[in-house]
Length: 321
Image (spheres, rainbow, N blue to C red):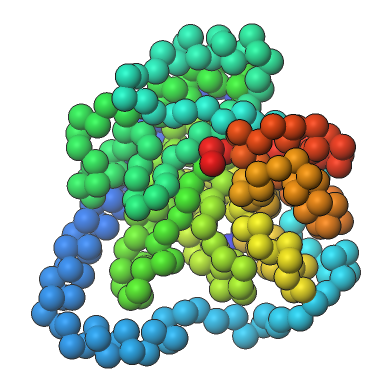
């Protein structure tokens, strides 16, 4: 259903940061013009849009090949997914932008002294908040030209030179829009933001925000295909919500997401105690091992690393509460 490509190797050294910039900026401009047109049409055709809203079920994509039902966690084959090629990291959460500014050379030095080999950085979250200085967001008028936020090329350049792996976190929202044309525009916008981060030499981007139904992986595949059209070298993973562990059809959902992503993660950042984290890991350990799943935990959870080590998990990443 979705185009896959061979996994890229982690890039050592920098290539020209402007290679894909014209395509990315062009995509942002197209999004801007299209968004203005859609807003105008929304005003002029309000009655038509109201009728669409009454038939909102027709806007949700369907996958006729998917079926619900419980399955054994290790029984179903995984097409095109190579668990042995999944990036394995231990990433500490680090603030990407600050109102007082960040000296990235000093930060990289401190990280190296602390033995940190990978960092987790929030790129996009909330209601279309871009957490860095973005030309794409500026073209869309979501950010001022003098935002005061971190320049990705500067930060990632310093981290890369210091041998620190950069793991981006992106909280997608395009699929939550009501109308299909709006969904398409915001998908293009979010894809351009992801490509912008990849072009700035992010090692990978993990996308959050998709649900526990068969439509989630369809939305994820659409976004990933759009991002890869702008930057084919993108390494993209999807973070499944914690609720997936409790579902009878969890094997089906993991295998479906595995058809579109380079790697899978499980977002357990909502777990607030070591005991609760330990319990959910034990319940899902077969799936975690099968897919070499990245475990996402809260940066403020005491004892999280010890619990992960007890379960034999070495692929993890921290995010803020």
